[in-house]
Amino acid sequence: MIQELTKATEHMHDFHLVFQPQYKLDIHAIAGVEALIRWKHPGKGWISPEQFIPVAERSGLIGRIGLWVMQEASRQFAAWRRAGISLRVSVNVSPEQLKDDGFVSSVQTVLRESGMESDCLTLELTEGAPLYQSPDAVARLHRLRDLGCSIAIDDFGTGYSSLKYLLDIPVQYVKLDRFFIQHLGHHTRSEAIVRSVIGLAGQLEFQVIAEGVESYDTIVHLAELGCHEIQGYYISPPVEAQHIPEIMARYPVSKTT
Ligand code: C2E
Ligand code: CA
Ligand code: CA
Image (cartoon, rainbow, N blue to C red; front, side, top):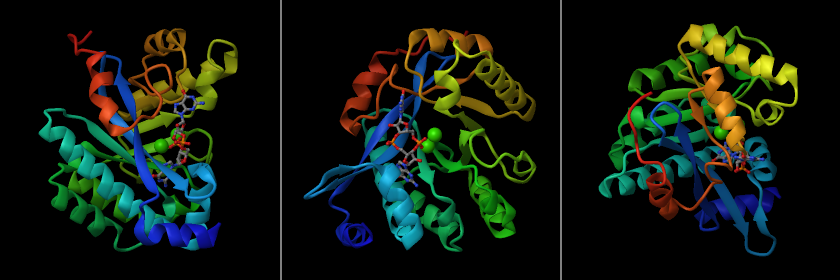
């Protein structure tokens, strides 16, 4: 796959972004979207990011792909804003990208060129031991936070099972992995974990976003547990950018509860 991916990243024409809404429970509205990459191979059709992102990480192509994702996401942000739509946009950042000394300045360039405010950009990072053991990567995260970007820990609770990094890096959001969410209501330990993560996040002043929410009952349950935001097929699967306004219109903002 490396050769095909290398070829595809020369022009990036076979890639595009889709966006999945993030629903904020207290205002009953879509407050943000997560950008997710799609690759349509000319011969083989759709290839999942779960297949090609690890290849991109191993081969060094992730830098180019990750930069393109940020450029596209910020370009889309600017287009929505011109249409009067305000949203926070999250992008996935590979730990490999944070190893690059030029990463912070490339984020600054993307923000400057698109006119996107830094506080509208969230960087989603997965839990990974080597990343948070590197003082350089931790310093880069602090520089990004100083710029005004937010940092979310993706797939929280499934990766590196140490909480020490929460002392070192400036986190605003934790994303509860769908594995825990999908067992909620059927599995008392899942409920205990979700409850504990929400409690921990409250103490640390993080917001909790639940991923993979597929039913109304789960939303009610998560709201009772004090979760802040919901992402999943129940609200909407990832969609093309042009569908975001109609999805937002289904959830008119109502007063804060
Ligand atoms: P992720 O960041 O955890 O993204 C959430 C994944 O869960 C997405 O899969 C999304 O389509 C899927 N999902 C959302 N709601 C539901 C639901 O209710 N039920 C179920 N079963 N699934 C749901 P997708 O788009 O295939 O992405 C898979 C992974 O690939 C992402 O997981 C992320 O780790 C990676 N990825 C995607 N785009 C990028 C990117 O631009 N850069 C990097 N570095 N990684 C990316
Ligand atoms: Ca993510
Ligand atoms: Ca995730």
